[in-house]
Length: 309
Image (cartoon, rainbow, N blue to C red; front, side, top):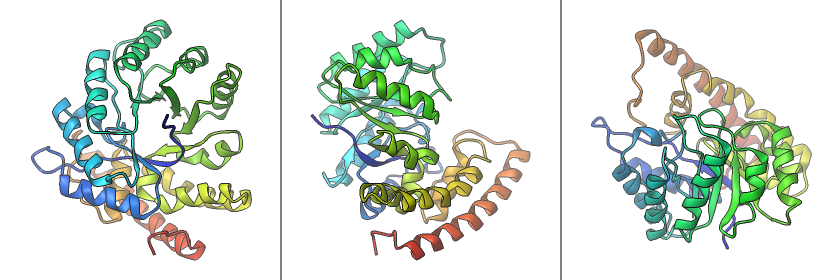
Protein backbone atom coordinates (compact mmCIF):
# COMPACT_ATOMS: atom_id res chain seq x y z
CA UNK A 1 0.00 0.00 0.00
CA UNK A 2 1.13 3.54 -0.80
CA UNK A 3 2.94 5.43 1.96
CA UNK A 4 4.02 9.07 1.70
CA UNK A 5 7.75 9.71 1.77
CA UNK A 6 9.96 12.58 0.67
CA UNK A 7 9.05 16.19 0.00
CA UNK A 8 5.41 17.10 -0.59
CA UNK A 9 4.04 20.57 -1.30
CA UNK A 10 0.98 21.77 0.58
CA UNK A 11 -0.49 23.61 -2.39
CA UNK A 12 -1.64 27.21 -2.27
CA UNK A 13 -4.70 28.17 -4.30
CA UNK A 14 -4.58 30.76 -7.09
CA UNK A 15 -7.89 32.61 -7.35
CA UNK A 16 -9.34 34.64 -10.21
CA UNK A 17 -11.09 37.97 -9.67
CA UNK A 18 -14.48 36.22 -9.54
CA UNK A 19 -13.34 33.97 -6.68
CA UNK A 20 -13.00 30.83 -8.77
CA UNK A 21 -9.80 28.79 -8.90
CA UNK A 22 -7.39 29.90 -11.62
CA UNK A 23 -6.89 26.55 -13.35
CA UNK A 24 -4.25 27.80 -15.78
CA UNK A 25 -1.99 28.94 -12.93
CA UNK A 26 -2.77 25.77 -11.00
CA UNK A 27 -1.47 23.66 -13.88
CA UNK A 28 1.66 25.80 -14.06
CA UNK A 29 2.24 25.20 -10.35
CA UNK A 30 2.00 21.42 -10.76
CA UNK A 31 4.46 21.49 -13.68
CA UNK A 32 6.87 23.62 -11.62
CA UNK A 33 6.74 21.21 -8.69
CA UNK A 34 7.36 18.20 -10.91
CA UNK A 35 10.30 19.91 -12.62
CA UNK A 36 11.85 20.81 -9.27
CA UNK A 37 11.90 17.19 -8.10
CA UNK A 38 9.12 17.06 -5.52
CA UNK A 39 7.82 13.64 -4.55
CA UNK A 40 4.19 14.62 -4.05
CA UNK A 41 1.57 17.34 -3.73
CA UNK A 42 -1.13 18.00 -1.16
CA UNK A 43 -3.95 19.99 -2.81
CA UNK A 44 -6.97 21.20 -0.79
CA UNK A 45 -4.67 22.19 2.07
CA UNK A 46 -4.81 24.60 5.00
CA UNK A 47 -2.43 27.05 3.35
CA UNK A 48 -4.57 26.55 0.22
CA UNK A 49 -7.59 28.07 2.01
CA UNK A 50 -9.79 25.01 1.53
CA UNK A 51 -12.12 26.31 4.26
CA UNK A 52 -13.13 29.10 1.86
CA UNK A 53 -13.91 26.68 -0.98
CA UNK A 54 -17.12 24.82 -1.85
CA UNK A 55 -17.16 21.06 -2.28
CA UNK A 56 -17.50 21.58 -6.03
CA UNK A 57 -14.42 23.80 -6.10
CA UNK A 58 -12.49 21.21 -4.12
CA UNK A 59 -13.58 18.45 -6.51
CA UNK A 60 -12.43 20.46 -9.52
CA UNK A 61 -9.14 21.42 -7.85
CA UNK A 62 -8.40 17.73 -7.22
CA UNK A 63 -9.28 16.85 -10.80
CA UNK A 64 -7.06 19.52 -12.35
CA UNK A 65 -4.09 18.54 -10.19
CA UNK A 66 -4.55 14.79 -10.74
CA UNK A 67 -4.81 15.19 -14.51
CA UNK A 68 -1.81 17.52 -14.69
CA UNK A 69 0.32 15.28 -12.50
CA UNK A 70 -0.27 12.34 -14.90
CA UNK A 71 1.27 9.87 -12.46
CA UNK A 72 4.60 11.75 -12.40
CA UNK A 73 4.13 12.79 -8.79
CA UNK A 74 2.02 11.50 -5.89
CA UNK A 75 -1.26 13.33 -5.30
CA UNK A 76 -2.73 13.24 -1.78
CA UNK A 77 -5.58 15.75 -1.55
CA UNK A 78 -7.04 17.07 1.65
CA UNK A 79 -10.42 15.59 2.63
CA UNK A 80 -10.96 17.58 5.80
CA UNK A 81 -14.26 19.05 6.94
CA UNK A 82 -16.25 19.87 10.05
CA UNK A 83 -18.14 16.58 9.62
CA UNK A 84 -17.38 13.05 8.48
CA UNK A 85 -20.11 13.21 5.83
CA UNK A 86 -18.32 15.85 3.75
CA UNK A 87 -14.90 14.31 4.38
CA UNK A 88 -16.20 11.03 2.98
CA UNK A 89 -17.50 12.82 -0.12
CA UNK A 90 -14.07 14.38 -0.67
CA UNK A 91 -12.28 11.07 -0.06
CA UNK A 92 -14.52 9.26 -2.54
CA UNK A 93 -13.89 11.93 -5.17
CA UNK A 94 -10.14 11.49 -4.64
CA UNK A 95 -10.63 7.73 -4.99
CA UNK A 96 -12.59 8.20 -8.21
CA UNK A 97 -9.77 10.35 -9.64
CA UNK A 98 -7.12 7.74 -8.84
CA UNK A 99 -5.31 9.80 -6.20
CA UNK A 100 -2.71 8.08 -4.04
CA UNK A 101 -4.23 8.89 -0.65
CA UNK A 102 -6.08 11.53 1.34
CA UNK A 103 -5.02 13.86 4.15
CA UNK A 104 -7.53 14.42 6.96
CA UNK A 105 -7.38 16.72 9.99
CA UNK A 106 -9.73 16.58 13.00
CA UNK A 107 -13.10 18.34 12.70
CA UNK A 108 -12.64 22.04 13.42
CA UNK A 109 -14.77 24.97 14.70
CA UNK A 110 -16.77 23.09 17.35
CA UNK A 111 -14.88 21.73 20.39
CA UNK A 112 -14.29 17.99 20.07
CA UNK A 113 -13.17 15.24 22.43
CA UNK A 114 -10.48 12.70 21.59
CA UNK A 115 -13.18 10.03 21.47
CA UNK A 116 -15.25 12.03 18.95
CA UNK A 117 -12.12 12.63 16.91
CA UNK A 118 -11.14 8.96 16.83
CA UNK A 119 -14.62 7.96 15.67
CA UNK A 120 -14.48 10.66 12.96
CA UNK A 121 -11.27 9.20 11.54
CA UNK A 122 -12.62 5.65 11.77
CA UNK A 123 -15.77 6.54 9.81
CA UNK A 124 -13.75 8.07 7.01
CA UNK A 125 -11.15 5.28 6.90
CA UNK A 126 -13.94 2.71 6.68
CA UNK A 127 -15.61 4.60 3.81
CA UNK A 128 -12.63 4.68 1.43
CA UNK A 129 -10.15 2.21 0.01
CA UNK A 130 -7.54 4.97 -0.22
CA UNK A 131 -4.64 5.21 2.23
CA UNK A 132 -5.40 7.82 4.90
CA UNK A 133 -2.87 10.31 6.25
CA UNK A 134 -3.79 11.84 9.61
CA UNK A 135 -3.18 15.58 9.88
CA UNK A 136 -2.30 17.10 13.24
CA UNK A 137 -2.62 20.88 13.04
CA UNK A 138 -3.02 22.42 16.51
CA UNK A 139 -3.03 25.93 14.99
CA UNK A 140 -6.53 25.35 13.63
CA UNK A 141 -7.96 22.15 15.12
CA UNK A 142 -7.89 20.11 18.33
CA UNK A 143 -4.53 18.31 18.59
CA UNK A 144 -4.58 14.55 18.04
CA UNK A 145 -3.39 12.74 21.15
CA UNK A 146 -0.61 10.16 21.03
CA UNK A 147 -3.00 7.50 22.28
CA UNK A 148 -5.44 8.13 19.42
CA UNK A 149 -2.63 8.03 16.85
CA UNK A 150 -1.36 4.80 18.39
CA UNK A 151 -4.75 3.09 18.13
CA UNK A 152 -5.49 4.39 14.63
CA UNK A 153 -2.09 3.24 13.39
CA UNK A 154 -3.30 -0.35 13.78
CA UNK A 155 -5.83 0.17 10.97
CA UNK A 156 -4.68 -1.15 7.62
CA UNK A 157 -5.38 1.97 5.56
CA UNK A 158 -4.24 4.62 8.06
CA UNK A 159 -0.66 4.72 6.86
CA UNK A 160 0.78 8.11 7.72
CA UNK A 161 0.58 11.33 9.66
CA UNK A 162 1.41 14.92 8.88
CA UNK A 163 2.39 16.63 12.12
CA UNK A 164 2.19 20.42 11.91
CA UNK A 165 2.68 21.01 15.62
CA UNK A 166 6.30 22.00 15.06
CA UNK A 167 7.00 20.30 18.37
CA UNK A 168 9.91 17.87 18.18
CA UNK A 169 9.07 16.44 21.62
CA UNK A 170 5.54 15.55 20.49
CA UNK A 171 6.87 14.12 17.23
CA UNK A 172 9.29 11.86 19.12
CA UNK A 173 6.47 10.52 21.29
CA UNK A 174 4.16 9.98 18.29
CA UNK A 175 6.84 7.95 16.53
CA UNK A 176 7.77 5.97 19.63
CA UNK A 177 4.19 5.07 20.59
CA UNK A 178 3.35 3.94 17.06
CA UNK A 179 6.55 1.93 16.62
CA UNK A 180 5.85 0.05 19.86
CA UNK A 181 2.63 -1.29 18.29
CA UNK A 182 4.64 -2.77 15.41
CA UNK A 183 3.14 -0.27 12.95
CA UNK A 184 5.38 1.23 10.27
CA UNK A 185 3.21 4.32 9.78
CA UNK A 186 5.14 7.13 8.07
CA UNK A 187 5.45 10.52 9.76
CA UNK A 188 5.92 13.74 7.81
CA UNK A 189 6.43 17.17 9.35
CA UNK A 190 4.22 20.09 8.43
CA UNK A 191 6.61 22.79 9.65
CA UNK A 192 9.42 23.42 7.22
CA UNK A 193 11.76 24.76 9.91
CA UNK A 194 12.37 21.29 11.37
CA UNK A 195 12.71 19.01 8.34
CA UNK A 196 16.44 18.33 8.81
CA UNK A 197 16.28 17.47 12.53
CA UNK A 198 13.02 15.53 12.09
CA UNK A 199 14.61 13.29 9.46
CA UNK A 200 17.36 12.35 11.93
CA UNK A 201 14.80 11.06 14.46
CA UNK A 202 12.72 8.98 12.07
CA UNK A 203 10.43 11.29 10.10
CA UNK A 204 9.97 10.24 6.47
CA UNK A 205 9.71 13.69 4.89
CA UNK A 206 7.60 16.81 4.94
CA UNK A 207 4.33 18.19 3.63
CA UNK A 208 4.77 21.97 3.67
CA UNK A 209 3.81 25.14 1.84
CA UNK A 210 7.47 26.07 1.37
CA UNK A 211 8.01 22.90 -0.67
CA UNK A 212 5.91 24.55 -3.37
CA UNK A 213 7.61 27.94 -3.04
CA UNK A 214 11.27 26.98 -2.57
CA UNK A 215 11.24 23.33 -3.64
CA UNK A 216 14.96 23.48 -4.36
CA UNK A 217 15.63 24.07 -0.66
CA UNK A 218 13.28 21.42 0.70
CA UNK A 219 14.42 18.77 -1.80
CA UNK A 220 18.01 19.82 -1.11
CA UNK A 221 17.57 19.07 2.60
CA UNK A 222 16.03 15.69 1.76
CA UNK A 223 18.75 14.77 -0.74
CA UNK A 224 21.54 15.78 1.64
CA UNK A 225 20.04 13.67 4.42
CA UNK A 226 19.60 10.69 2.08
CA UNK A 227 23.26 11.03 1.12
CA UNK A 228 24.30 11.04 4.78
CA UNK A 229 25.49 14.66 4.63
CA UNK A 230 23.89 16.06 7.79
CA UNK A 231 26.12 19.14 7.76
CA UNK A 232 24.82 20.12 4.33
CA UNK A 233 21.21 19.36 5.30
CA UNK A 234 21.52 21.63 8.32
CA UNK A 235 23.23 24.36 6.28
CA UNK A 236 20.38 24.38 3.77
CA UNK A 237 17.82 24.23 6.59
CA UNK A 238 19.25 27.32 8.27
CA UNK A 239 19.37 29.24 4.98
CA UNK A 240 15.60 29.23 4.59
CA UNK A 241 14.63 30.29 8.12
CA UNK A 242 14.59 34.08 7.46
CA UNK A 243 12.09 33.53 4.63
CA UNK A 244 9.76 31.54 6.89
CA UNK A 245 9.83 34.30 9.51
CA UNK A 246 9.06 36.91 6.85
CA UNK A 247 6.14 34.93 5.38
CA UNK A 248 4.59 34.44 8.82
CA UNK A 249 4.84 38.20 9.47
CA UNK A 250 1.68 38.63 7.38
CA UNK A 251 -1.74 37.15 8.23
CA UNK A 252 -1.68 33.48 7.19
CA UNK A 253 -1.45 32.56 4.33
CA UNK A 254 -0.91 35.96 2.67
CA UNK A 255 2.87 35.92 3.18
CA UNK A 256 3.17 32.50 1.54
CA UNK A 257 1.08 33.64 -1.43
CA UNK A 258 3.24 36.75 -1.77
CA UNK A 259 6.38 34.59 -1.93
CA UNK A 260 4.87 32.30 -4.57
CA UNK A 261 3.87 35.34 -6.63
CA UNK A 262 7.50 36.42 -6.55
CA UNK A 263 8.35 33.08 -8.13
CA UNK A 264 6.13 33.96 -11.07
CA UNK A 265 2.66 32.66 -10.22
CA UNK A 266 -0.41 34.94 -10.25
CA UNK A 267 -2.16 34.06 -7.00
CA UNK A 268 -4.95 36.65 -7.21
CA UNK A 269 -6.75 38.45 -4.40
CA UNK A 270 -6.90 37.30 -0.80
CA UNK A 271 -10.08 35.44 0.11
CA UNK A 272 -10.05 37.05 3.56
CA UNK A 273 -10.47 40.86 3.26
CA UNK A 274 -7.81 43.04 4.88
CA UNK A 275 -8.16 46.39 6.59
CA UNK A 276 -6.30 49.39 5.17
CA UNK A 277 -3.67 49.05 7.91
CA UNK A 278 -3.19 45.34 7.15
CA UNK A 279 -2.86 46.07 3.44
CA UNK A 280 -0.16 48.61 4.18
CA UNK A 281 1.68 46.14 6.41
CA UNK A 282 1.38 43.44 3.75
CA UNK A 283 3.12 45.76 1.30
CA UNK A 284 6.04 46.11 3.70
CA UNK A 285 6.14 42.36 4.30
CA UNK A 286 6.17 41.68 0.55
CA UNK A 287 9.14 44.00 0.13
CA UNK A 288 11.01 42.15 2.90
CA UNK A 289 10.10 38.77 1.40
CA UNK A 290 11.50 39.87 -1.97
CA UNK A 291 14.86 40.85 -0.48
CA UNK A 292 15.16 37.59 1.44
CA UNK A 293 13.94 35.44 -1.46
CA UNK A 294 16.41 37.03 -3.87
CA UNK A 295 19.25 36.13 -1.49
CA UNK A 296 17.91 32.61 -1.08
CA UNK A 297 17.72 32.09 -4.84
CA UNK A 298 21.40 33.07 -5.04
CA UNK A 299 22.14 30.50 -2.34
CA UNK A 300 20.28 27.88 -4.38
CA UNK A 301 22.48 28.65 -7.37
CA UNK A 302 25.67 28.55 -5.29
CA UNK A 303 24.73 25.18 -3.80
CA UNK A 304 23.53 23.84 -7.19
CA UNK A 305 20.20 22.77 -5.77
CA UNK A 306 17.99 23.44 -8.80
CA UNK A 307 17.01 20.15 -10.40
CA UNK A 308 15.23 21.91 -13.27
CA UNK A 309 18.50 23.26 -14.67
